[in-house]
Length: 466
Image (cartoon, rainbow, N blue to C red):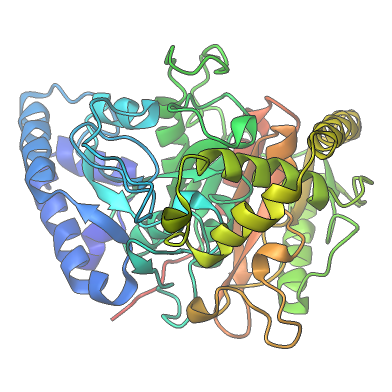
């Protein structure tokens, strides 16, 4: 019965609550039991608040019993990445030196929206320090492991959130994405990871990485992500760059299919190497889009490798975020982050920064013009499947770090376009691969429609960790 509860969708849980066949307190008890069962092996959480979760579940159960549920998310377990604010909880940012000194006095907007919707907040999930890399370990909380293979990383920086979703602990999980930090772990763990258009999900406090940073859902299904997005996109005046509400119900607006859409398939964005096993699965997915009625053409967007521009902007943000630390405190940072702050960022000039800003603008223009011809762009979400958790992504042959390699996700943080990672199969090693679906700026609806159509054509399952 436990596994049956754990992998129910948001709609299925709501239907059982309404029929009084299952209660929010029973679902919470199952979620907490799964944390007890798995946490010692996967290390997904930075903090679990059992008392507040139990109080929230009791309140939700009373609403369902009265027939006064707040909506589809009422009574649904949720997690928050340890980089956001939750009233009464102390955000650590995965750091020994950057943690808040006191519990937060207010919720970040996505947290507030889930709380208003009646979701049950379980706790904070592990992240690398300030979400700085695509691999989840942190000086404060240690290494997080992938439930598909405990020797592998779940990716990052929202790795703990992805593990909580994959193991049936929480259907709803808030991640952040400054260069792929929602989509990378979704790819590595076989989930749906949604980076909506820049400004679609209000965020506060503002990220040091500016408008490249996004907040969004990590869920087991596209529909669960859509229901979560309906809540997260509600307005919040604390984000001065937030888009006005568009009134879209993403859960009902995504059922239109993709017949007739113009879809570009780029195997590697024209400038990087993708592992053969991943490339084969993504190519098969592109063929699947054609079988669903889309007009699919293999074509690269044509922009040059934007890695240098992204690095400059990111390094500058990291330096700003850590600017107040003493030399002794910097010594307690993740060694890779310390290298960025003390060596890479310190060598930047104002000209470097302005050139990076110009390159970002040119990339945005190039992709707007590209989408004059194509409704969607398909790429791999990551160029390889999950690597060893203890190696921090270091290639033993080249000694190159994963974070030094080109990425398929970060260009679309720079442009602000909506992008989703959804599973497209397993490699011969039994590890998930992700398909990235990118849409024109602010056309989140079409991206959600495409992800839903693919989900219905090729359902997937979660790992079954004993």
